[in-house]
Length: 377
Image (tube, rainbow, N blue to C red; front, side, top):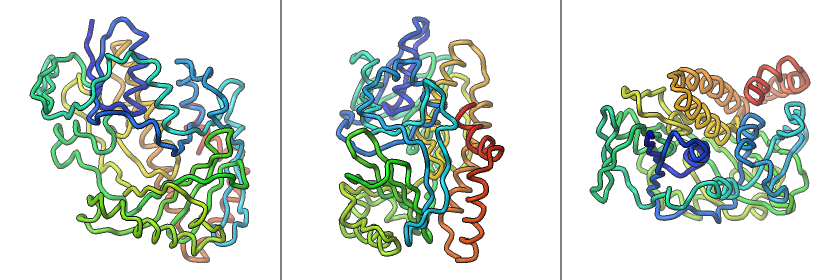
């Protein structure tokens, strides 16, 4: 029986563990750096059909519908006056059993944890070193060494595994943008509302059937290196309120009074594709590659990559990295294009963008290529 070490108890690591749990050819252990998993986080995520199909294989179709929402459209609006630019029908990519879904991230984590025996998850495991060979030896901060046939790194964009393997090259780079997350109650629209403004955009969408909504804003922001890594600075209430005020002043929504539980995160992205030299070490989710959030594929790609890796190990093939690079390139190009287009500030460029949005949002061939190739492939 092959032994697998999974580093990180996020979406990718937990989904991969659920798949391995159903296969008796492998044993596994999850190592999580933190001392617990926070299930009180009320922030939302979007899951397109490509990931729902995979989650349904492990019983997600039985998940409580009251904790989910199934938006039918994404509506593009000018932030300044909330006037609608156009909309895209998301339901055209759905099928009878797989629907575009929004929910709280913590609820998805809780669902994934339910499929994993408690003794398979070890906390307070800070990875210190990796010795590569026919077997992978992992040294943790408690000085204990563990040997495994495979190492699956699912420890996110700040992956300790990548930093050990690739040194400074394993570090992500700041994207000159800040994300603001929060929650809103009783918003007026139950679709995904995407507001476009100069050097920022924000999205509001329902995350369950209880009139709770997620708020996520991305604001262009240059910061010196010292401030990017200063948690106290990013957690400072004045800094967060100033950012929210900056957005709210260029919008006709009173976001300052509507958005609650605000958290601030610098956006980091991967610098390049990095593939370990050892054939028994694998990177999944954001640990493999992290892209801007403007295409809303972070969680879905974490699930997809875990599924691809499981298929590779189960069938003893070696196509994982080749497939993952091709898939990631699709997402990167769309994420970067969206980020650029959403943040235009020149009035002429905005007019041109809005005209194109109105045309392409109703062009089925374009939508199938731009969205369908991701959602349905």
